[in-house]
Image (cartoon, rainbow over all chains, first blue to last red; front, side, top):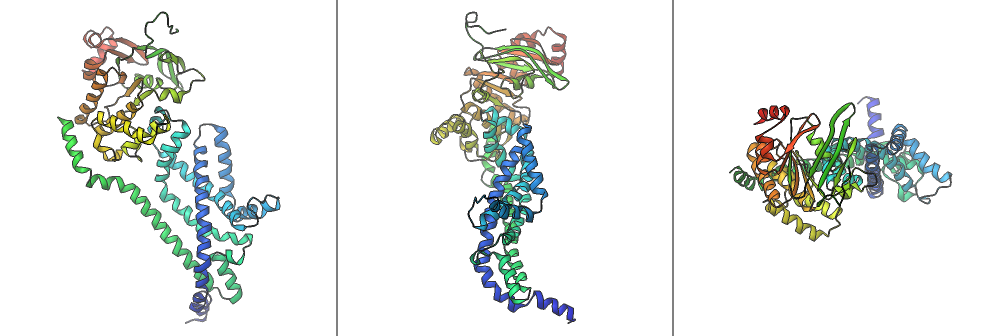
Length: 256
Length: 252
């Protein structure tokens, strides 16, 4: 094997090193990464949906602030947002979340992903037929009630596949929490890997972390796609099996 | 014009007064007046683009008139300060495209407004919904999704959904136009039953047979003007205006 290739394999794929760091990654890192990303996904989705309903508003004073928000947080590098929120807020004396780094990281990630997701949700909401809003309003529901109960649930379903990218991005970007300083027990996948590389002088720990990230993100992608397929096909499948016969029966009656 | 209690023994269920509607430069309604007495069925007929759907949609403010008024039970619903959500909850509307909520079961389509608008308890709302579904002959479809039903069945669910709110007036916007021919009759039968039970109905329709047979009053619109109106025997039997004559010769 040429020396260069040998060095490369030794540096990134030292099985001994990978095996050494794996227990730490799986015991602490995996759980912490999942915790941060799950929280960021939930908060980001909430922010995204609220922003989206503002973005489609006919009132400019609701639309304008939402638009500014999206432009800013979509335009800044995530690392800047994480530093400004996680380091900036406490420096400014705003200790919303005490000394714990996690909530700040989650908040920053949610701010960013909310901006991205709002555009996805907006397109979903706008794709819902106008008649749905008219039907809901003519039953006496308020605009917000119609949005919440009728329009948004349909819009969200339609953009599920597009959201996968955002969910995966959250898992990966959760590593940025290391910028804010962590207790030993709080280290997530990337921090553990990074610290290990400093101790050993070998980068195989990063490869190990990468493998665990893939073990999260690939199943996540397939899970969202499966959920999407189920929502899409649910009606049609049941139509063919349980409802087929009575439908025809009644159709025949109607025809008489 | 004002609707005064002293001069009319009965306030009309719906009164449209001097209604104008413009979409930008395009004028769709040009000063329409129409009165609908309680318990009557009024059919609005006319060519596509004559403004009949817009007129209907002004009656629950899905379209805001440019000028003029719409009175429901004597209340001007175009006025400022009117709680339009409350008004709409007493006006049933049935659309050409059904507009059922596809992500909800048939039952929930009907209970939604009962619970969220009327504040009804879940059990009571379900009871009402099942009764109205029985009225339209679809009791066994409670758990189905709209996508699993035929167009005719969807439209009947939409009618049940509107009726569940116990509306004072039912508005029908070409309720059978999107249906396959063999499914039209089932929907028209239900509308006939409603008319027979003295529901106040305003129906935009291309079904001249239905208008002739069921309507108490027929109004013909042409280019945003209510050209001619009267009992169906007069409108269909002895049309006075050339425009109505021309229209009827096209459709009959």
